[in-house]
Image (cartoon, rainbow, N blue to C red; front, side, top):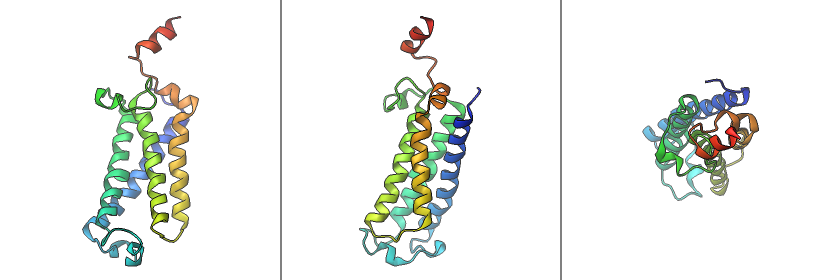
Length: 161
């Protein structure tokens, strides 16, 4: 299965997201004080949390494990009917829509940090940019072409005309 350069970039960015979130989320789960990552407890003062457990769970699962599922879909492109019903790009493989969802989740994660008055850092900018790229790249014509569903009856009819 041949992929465009943009599709390969999407795979790399998804991998970067997973690699950065899994260890950080795990560290917050095993040390809910945030000490392993050097996070001050003051970061929690404006949040509804007493510890970093819930942020760690979100970071680990939603921004760490979920990107691995997306990456699997981008690489292997398995047919999964359960995911097809929740895709915004209905005539494309589900991994493309899930990449967009991942970008939206990442941007939301950063915005929530600002809501809780966590001081701005370069990482906020970098991960916001990553989230934006995870939304924009799947919408590019080259990537969309890579992920057109071959089993889509409407697409087959168009191609045969």
